[in-house]
Image 1 (cartoon, rainbow, N blue to C red):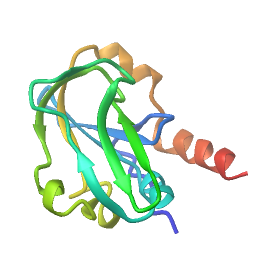
Image 2 (cartoon, rainbow, N blue to C red):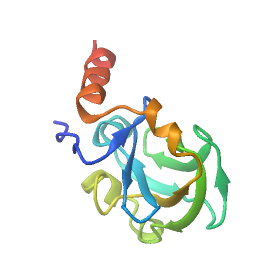
Image 3 (tube, rainbow, N blue to C red):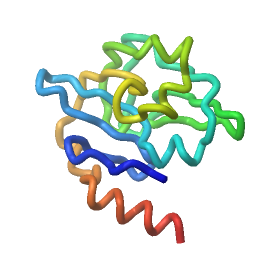
Length: 132
């Protein structure tokens, strides 16, 4: 059963979330729905610090026992930190996708891009559509 999507962040149609840290940076991860679809995550390829990604550009790769999935950046920006803990314990994404299972911290490049993202209620509606 999916956990409720926190209302303190925005969501992409590709099932990533982004949370503004209030200091000019934002944390990015995959949603609970995405980790549920992937099943048991066994490996995460994180971006190098300093990588500049475009909106919807490849940010990371998540490998589960079922498949390999690309993770796209919800907004463009520079990677300023990564969750190194995932290199040893990628299953944190399954256990806590909205918390300890975060992927990267970005310094967003274009504030206007957030307008293309969904709030929690709109993201819930998207998931319901996908399930039908």
